[in-house]
Image 1: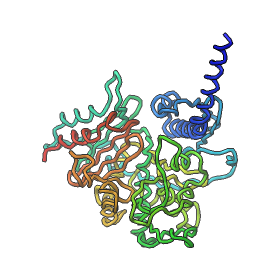
Image 2 (image 1 turned 90 degrees about the horizontal axis):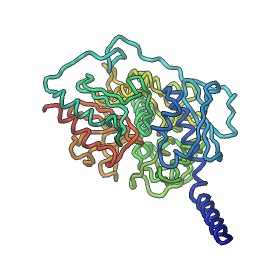
Image 3 (image 1 turned 180 degrees about the vertical axis):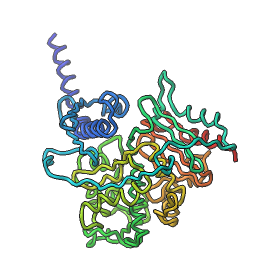
Image 4 (image 1 turned 135 degrees about the vertical axis):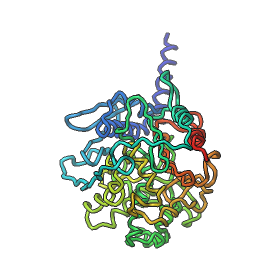
Length: 449
């Protein structure tokens, strides 16, 4: 019996040591991810804690968190086995923000001054219901089958699609939502937000207020080799700065999103590993640095807040969109843009129409072309904060497709040669779960050439 107890004690000690070595360092990130996800999903999109836990937070390790929502206080908390509790607060107009113990919740804060587009036009150029349109060259039964196939059957499955929206020649030709979601559901785009950030720079370039080919205006770099990095290098993820982006482990990206107070400074403080424009390296830190650089272009915080909405988002009637901030007040341009699937499709339509929105040129055509031009060393898969199919990642899809892409399979696909925008929102991606090539091909094949 004594021998058994000794063995049992040894097993317990070893298990505890293993947990401490492998899992404990991750607890802060786990509870941080969970608290932020719960707060945003609940207060932005009115989802229940149970739905968020079941469909957004059912990720390996994240599902270890215990969560609570305080509706009166407008915040959510999460912990793992009672350890490392984190808190995310919600502020109307700003969304949710993950805070630390030093964050002063009583401090006044500014809100974006928005002028939401209101007109009597049908969707997509307005917010009235779309008009029924029938195209003779669209096989609607084939289209419906392709869209239906993107969703799981009532018995379940692994595709986990939440929404599909298809625009063709400025008209809505297909739309479907999973149970619990509808056209008014706000869904996190994750890294699709990067393309919103790029668009803000596109407007400044059109206004002649920045030159993307000049060295980036970062005063902290002026006394070292980083002074030669241009905005063009940053927009192309080709700066040569050190960065690790691997969501399966503790890395620069996870520490930034779930620990940093000022997310823009995380990449700003990184050393150069390579010369600019020689090594493509995907970095959410770079996009948040771009957001910080954008912030520094304005004299006041209010001007910065207003610009994102006034310049692009509200201009095209993305009335549902919220871009959340970090603790310092900088928009998390890498990851935290929320909008309805219909509004995400409007953003795609803006680029399909070469920056023109119903007669108003919001972005120069040259900017849209620049966006969809392959980055040096990216093997045809990346442009300026947009992904590309120029390298043939999706073999059955036209090579001119460029797209916004986000974690867990968010996509706004823009296909100029077919005059089409396809939106898919979900919580799973990868060949084993969702076949994007087959999904896109099925929709494309429903349109007769």
